[in-house]
Figure 1 (cartoon, rainbow, N blue to C red):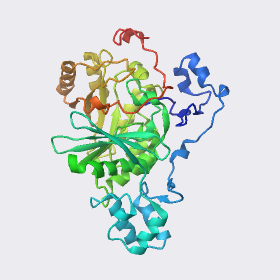
Figure 2: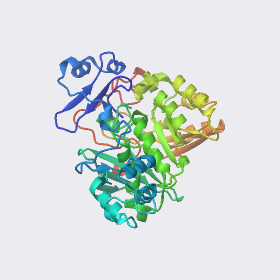
Figure 3: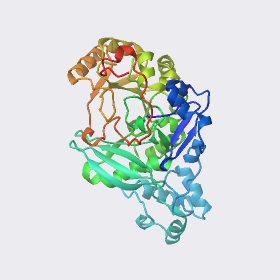
Figure 4: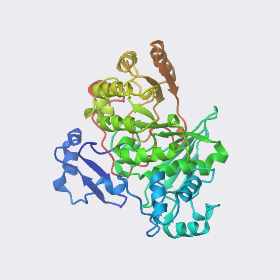
Length: 435
């Protein structure tokens, strides 16, 4: 999850070699997290930079134009948008529904006009002339020893994203989708965070990950029943496109995922979290990972803007308005950092009054990481302490880690990477004496 302050500054790393696009303000709170040398390097006055508004990358509600000439990309439209587009070309709403079902339903998942069987001949001709269906190009698929698949997709601009499909013996198969190329959160335990933020994904690029996963792998892994927005990126930093893509996924005439089985995860962007709870019926996960502001400020710099108290009190207030709704707290366990008996007791107190479940997640090491995973025996002790308090808690061990497909392992950082933050004195021994 990587370089950039969420509020008023962002560092965008371009796909062009030796080319960077910066948008940093002198008052950015994120600059205070950096060393003086790096602050000078990122100083606006020291750069000749191209300035981009993030809306250039599909932040808004507009219809995307495909790289295939001037054709309109239909993926990423909501059904009402598609209906309007079809009507604008002289065809009835019924034709729009037939098209929608062939793009997202009926086990067709069409990516080309030739796959649109059963449509009116003139309608298909119009689509061939004016519409594009693919937002992603398959690059490669890696299969881990436990059956997890990591799919690499190339985008129109040459950037690459990763999507993970996780089979389960209990008949539930999950697709983990990305919402950004890279990430701006700079969580210290996350490999994606080393990348910096390249750009947001469009709603089409997000939704098509789920479509392509079903199209490519249903025959091998069975029905894909669940979606988690836990791949590359901070979903709520790209809130417009994430909500739009999630709505497409749960459409009853389309992909037909149950809203309860589509889970969107956040590191804790409070205003966007409130908006999501008001506008979406999908499930929410919050990546917590610490029980004190001191630790969370270090391993998750977003906490310097939205403190634990604010985050958790917002959840208490908002969830009072939602019936039969539980938030999922994710807690990546880092040996010697957040796995003490005191952490377990504080976690119990922190979530009081919040309808919730807790996932204890094994940390997945990666190149350049300072942290070590908590031993399984200790994770079990930690879980038992929480369970004794009457909370619902699960252990989530690694899946796909031998192919860098596990939680926190996605992406490919370049030579310019997000900064590692200063380690608090009391934790330097736990990570081998680094400073």
